Length: 187
Image 1 (cartoon, helix red, strand yellow):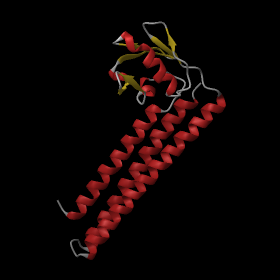
Image 2 (cartoon, rainbow, N blue to C red):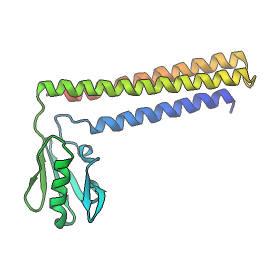
Image 3 (spheres, rainbow, N blue to C red):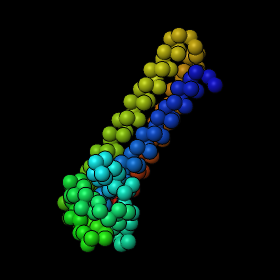
């Protein structure tokens, strides 16, 4: 593989990782519907060790506006309830001794707009990351040209590929943001 192809391949991989990170971040943003990913960052004090909630309880979404958490060890149900309250998720756990229910209240119109702004801001942050990757790839190409590892023609073709990869990455980010924004604003 030529040195300039290596730079383009590295850029492509970096953009893919950036888009994957954005998609992962979008799963954690609250919409009007229940989603188990909302609880991914909750840590429970499980016998003195901060443990992810999913590792000490079964998490389910039986209804569109309800998440249930059923601990495998009933003795830690209070610890799970405490961790859910401390996570400041915006809803109050209801404990019946066996299962913790998390009813998801509907979002107000203002809250939906605020969340949509957060989604757009996250998209912009990831676009900046893609543009920084493009800058790094172009600098690598300039270095290869200066060191006479590649020719002027190879440099020109590689820069066109870099720009094409960047444009595709930004379009993908726009698509992810638009889908999430539509989901958030849906009543």
